[in-house]
Image (cartoon, rainbow, N blue to C red; front, top):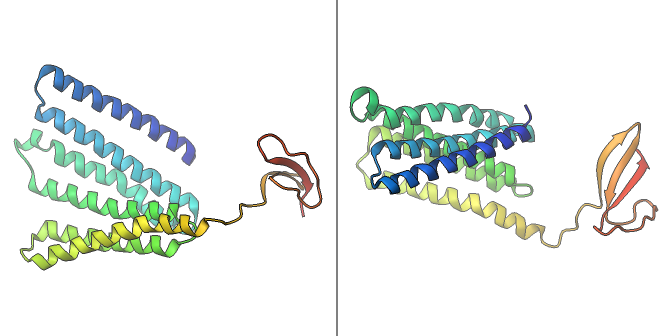
Length: 232
């Protein structure tokens, strides 16, 4: 199954989840009571969206090439995160109350997947300023790791919390600064002269907005020409 089919399935699933969430919210308004079960269902649907999007980003990075290992890691970590989150959400049904271990595992998996999602999407969106996107991924990994340590050890010092906050701030800065600088550096850049749409027996089907290799073709209404040329 190709990434495009997976993307279609994900967006269809996302639409279904949003409709289900809206129906639950409407039902709660009509009956005048928003129960704990309604809240848990909504959080579960949100977890499905979160992990599904992360898995799709990981698979997209696998197809991109250079960071396939990271892509596979994110794609495989997403269902594991979903399992931990669903366990934490619904653990009350088995032990009659909250499960502290399940909650910590769930939050740890959410933070770890968030770091992978930031790294994956940053590299997917970056075309020229890849280094800054990579820095955002590294900072996200450090911030996530320290946050997970804080969840399990519960340190009392303010310095630890401040370090985590600074790391997340720098992560956010690098993550959003990368596409901004990329757009800034691309202003005024000349678009590609020609795009090869297909090749058959050494003959290329080329789309171009200008004359190509001395071939003069009348410009169509859309501004792009289709040219058949012998492949060099």
